Structure formats: C-alpha cells, structure tokens
Image (tube, rainbow, N blue to C red; front, side, top):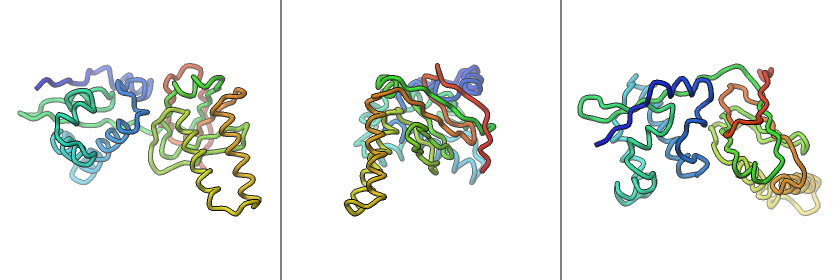
Length: 234
C-alpha cells in the first residue's frame, strides 16, 4: 500500500501557523471533524495509558468504520476520499510511517501557549461562511455588540464561524421553548436570538472576539485577525 509520510517542514509550519492552515480536508464538515477527534482521542488514550508512541492504523480504522456505520472499508474510504493512511497524512499534526510491515501513526498535539484574544471583524455573510473557527476547549467566543458569549466547552470544536453562531442561536431557541410566555428571562433571550439572526445576515458589521486561554484557537483564513496578549487566568 502507498504510504504518505509527513514531511519534516509540516511540524515547523504547525508551530508558527497553527494546525488549521495545514489541514487538507474541510474540517468544518461534521463527519470529518468527528473522525479527526476520534483519531486524536484514540492515540492520546493509548499514549497516556501505555506510553505507546506509534500505533498501527488498523485498530482506529476498524473502530471508525464500525462506529460510524459504514458497511465495509470501501464505503469508509469513499467517505474520506481515499486510503486511511492518506487521510491521516493530510493533517500536519499527524505523522505516518511504516514500522516493520505495518503502517503506524503518531500525533503531535498542539502545545498550549500564553493567553490571548483573537478578534475578527465580520463585514459579510460570505466571511462567516468561508471562515473556519477552531475554538479551543477552554476558549470563549464573544460578540461585544450583542453582549453575548459562547462559554468555554470541554471539547475543541471546529466549524464554520456561521455554524458556530447558528448552533448558539438554536440552543437559545430550544431553551426558550421551555420557558413561560412573557417571562422576563424568555424576553431577554429572544432579544439575543434576534441579535444573532441579525449577525448571521450581517445587517451591520460586527466583531467576534475569542478569549483564548491556552492559545489553541484559530481562524482560517487568518488574514485580518487581530491577535493580542491577554490576562485570562480567572
């Protein structure tokens, strides 16, 4: 089988540009993000529990095929547009090589850095749709003009910026459905829902600010993103 091995420059680029810039797959697609997440969790668990550095790809490949409901390996490889080894090699933080007669992989997880803020000025719906946001597990997304925030979650989330806001709006609407008509809380939430709808249509330009405690969040493309150091210890 053909094996694509990570070129040495890939990790250096990841250190300076982050991991999103080197992704050769659209990770805002939920299926791709889920596959990538499961691969990372599989490797991290094996590495932490047994100290294993290089893992054969067969284990995670078969797990994903079965867990995601694919009938066979051909169907799985159709979904990832080729051999699983090529899929792994399409990400700058995943290294593949032959170990003996087996194809193995290891992951270079991004290292946390000093707290910072990332500010993106949104002036069109096109910008929302074409910008991918990797929101770190401990990062908070804020829209200052709405006095609205998406709090830190326990997992990294990669999606288009548009879909991040849609998901937040949908959660608020779902919460509203459980509140009494005319309640003060419901009225306030509905105002925020309306504000998010306005942002999704970009009726007027607005800023998105990521409070990035571990410096693991990224925008792609990164052009126009203002990055500043921040004190986010609390």
